[in-house]
Structure formats: structure tokens, C-alpha cells
Image 1: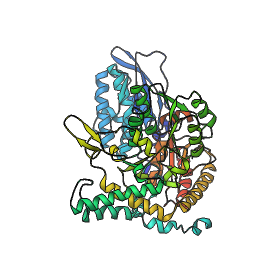
Image 2: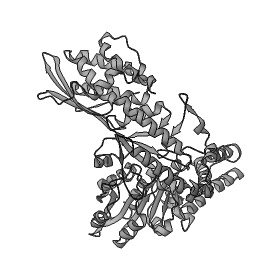
Image 3: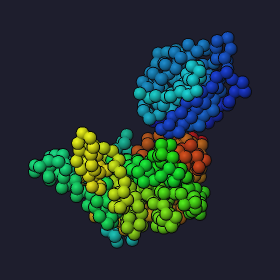
Image 4: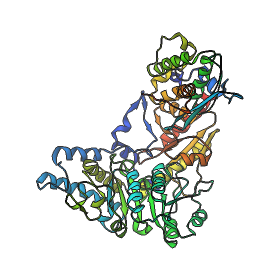
Length: 149
Length: 413
């Protein structure tokens, strides 16, 4: 019945949405920030531990849909080991991919399953919310705002 | 269904009045179960607005020419229709607003600041739309009026004993409560609320945004002081709604916004106000929308509230029976007296994911906090999906929702 939805809900998204690998508050962290989507009530809080100028560990607490939880989890996989500048560039590419459905940025390889959201304008923010929270954490802000425009 | 057909209700015929219902969504029949957010419009509403634009349109209340006079008559006739709909004692007790939200802001401003004194209190309930919460928070912060929250029971009914205990100290000047919850479908016992509040010297405002769509409202029988509804949920256009207020109350209140149409006379130094209700209607109003609302009200009256209410009851009973029999579906609100707004969650799937899957089958439901975030916390959820019904909703559409939800559950298992 929902075959055409497999673009959006790929297996990896359903899996990570159900059982995220990084869905926990870190025991020690040096930055945290939350992302709120006031239109739907979704909230993601990310926790970072940095060392040698690179993100060594990322955990998150989320209340939200499968897309936002899976996006946060895949984001954690993708950014660990990277510098804040690299992560900001990835975030920019990711938001672009979520809106357009395409990206030639090789750094986004593992995030490509989320490209399907571009067909669902009301769901783009679900995918970009964790990135907004992460950017806020890197900037030392308490809160990030996801935009879909 | 026999009782309904005896009332002359024929849903097939009604659906023909709403052309949008024959639209296809990605090749599937549209199953529109989001009328509680905004209802679809019958042809008569569209025609009334189109006719005005084609044949009789000008600004109202100011032109001395034929077009303005005819337009004013058509627009003002809506005030008569609203007065009839709500059984107001006098047409001057009907104030045009743009929606219910504006009505709450009007009362919070003009009654809240103009009549209530700092130290007095306003009571709302735990199951209010943000429109009946945020304006009172703003009043509290600006004017020193206390805001009290009346509890609901776990079944989703207003806790009348809890309400009474908030009234006990006699400080409450206004009780503002929904007539029908936009999340739980609960009808509140309006008559008892009014009697109780009046016994403690408090005025009462009811949010009829959902209730007036399904049930006849009689503001005189209720003895309610303020009542509001919005046109777009009642099959009318957006941008037009109404506030009913008892004449002596409206007379005692200062204007809301200043500008054209609400004045008696103006000099550079000072102005005087127009009579009630015009002193609350600053600026060029939503003329075409008002004319459209008149057509919507007449449409509803022609079907008749007994038939509308019977249809809603049949739909609600069917939906509650079908949805509650699905494993993993959790329904919110078990009020004895409830109507065609049903919130639910599905185990293992977030409401947004549920809504996206339903949408792929052409089924439109709302998902989120329904502009009632504190109520979501009270219910212990972040969000729910919500199916809400209109005159054109069919039992088959509810079956489609139930059947598809079973498949949605399988998808996320």
C-alpha cells in the first residue's frame, strides 16, 4: 500500500528512527543545544564532546517523528571526527539536499537516504532540525531554529 | 441512519455541494478528515462572493451611491443571520471579527483592560486552544489580572468542582472556556458553567469555534455573556468571524482598535466612538467574506442542526468503535458528551509519520499539538493525529481511515 513511500521511509530511516545508535545524553559533554519546531512540537537536544578541535562524540535526546530521529542519528555518524568548519559545511550541503533532493557533496554519502524528504515540503524541517541544533551547539548558542524556506 | 434520513439528511446530495470533495490526491479519492482545522466550502458560498464581485461591490458604511448601499445591505444582512444563528436578542450584540482569535483579543483588551481591575482574575481551562490562553497571559502581564487554569478530568471533561474552587474567593471577573474541545471533542456543560460562574459574580465567554459547526447554540438560553465563532470552520470563508456580547457589556467596554468606521466624530484633538457594535469594528471589514458567511449560515440552517447533530453523532460513534478496535491505536478523551473531533496516537509511529502515510492514501488528518500545547502536556503526549468531521463526511471515509491505520501500523512494525 505504501510502496511509493519507500523513498522517504527507507529501511535505514525506519531502523534508526526506532533504535537510534546515538540517542542518549552524553555523560560528559562540552556543548549542548536544542532545536525546536514550534509548529509540530518536535524537539531535539544535542550533546557534543570535542577534543583536538574535532567532535569526538555526539549524543542526542529527541522527541519527534521517525525522520527527525533518524536524521539526528545519521548526523551523529557523519560528523564524528570532523572539525566545526567541516560540520558547518556539511550542514549547509545537507539543508540544500533536503530541499532539492540532490547533492554532489561526497561528505553526505551516508545521509543520502534523507534526500527523499524534498518531496514532502512539510517534512523538510523534520530532517533539518537536528542540524540546526548541532550548529547552535557549535556556535555556543542554546537554541537552533530549523527553516524550510 | 434512519433517524437521520427522516430529518431529510442525504450525505450524497450534500457532497455534491462541495466540488473539492471529488478531487483526486495522487490518483486517490480525497478523504478529508480535517474539517476541524478548516471546513470545505459549498458552491453557494463561492457563488455569493463571486456574485458580489461581479454585480454589487463597493466599500460599506460610507458610500452614498447605489453600489455602496447595496453592498452595505448585503454585508449587514450577515449580522442578522449571525444573530439568528446564535439567537441573540438584538443584532447590535453581534460584532464582526476576523476570526475567533481576534474575538478573544478584543475581549481581553476591551473587557480585560477596560472593565476588569488589577487583582481580579480570569479563568480558562486546561483544554483551551492557544487563542483562548495567550491573550489572557498578555492581559495578565500588562494589566495585573491573575490567570487561573481550571482542571479537566482524565476523561477529558471539565472538572466542575475544580472550577468552583477557583471561583470561591470572588475575585474572578471572567470565565473563558471552550464550548467544544478542538482536541478531545468534549462538549462542555455550558449552561452549568454559566450558572456557576454567575453565582460567583463572574462573566462567561465561550469559544464556539468547534461547537457551532455541529450544534444549535442559543446564547439567551445559555445566558452566556460572550460567545465567539469563526466563519471558515462553518463552511464559510476565512477572515470573517463574530463575537456575541450582551449589549450592556459591550456598551460598558472601550473600543478595541481605532480607525475608520468605529468613530462618532473626529477632530485633531479627540474622537468619539460609534455605537455598539460599530465601535469595535475599525477599518474596512472583510466585506466579501461577510457576504460569503451569510450564504454559509443559510446553508447550515437549510440542512438544519437536528440533522447535522444526528449525522455527527453517527459518525463519532462509528469512528470510536472502529478506531478503538485497532490494536495500538490510543484514543484521547472519553467525555460522555463528545462530538466529531477524535485525537489518537498509534504505538510505534509518531503522529507526523502517521499523517504522511495517511496522506499517501488521500486521507487528510491533522497531526501536531493542535494549537493546544499545554493540553498535550496534560495528556502526556507531544502530539496526536486528529480526525475531524463535517456535514459531508461519510461512514465509508471513516472506514478508509481505520483500514489504512491498520496498514500504517504494519508499516512501522
